[in-house]
Image: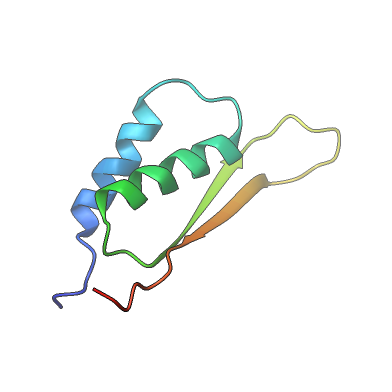
Length: 79
């Protein structure tokens, strides 16, 4: 339990990005969320963010487009 991420704080970070400056690419949104989580939670070793946009105006019929990004921190064994 001591190593568990505080999901309420993580959701606050996500909502800050989503309600902040308008971003055009879902890849940029995922990257911003990962960067904020990485700063907020220095103990976090790995995180994956998936952004899904529904109702995309594409020529082909698709339900959504999606971007998934992962960030991983190296474990510092000297600490």
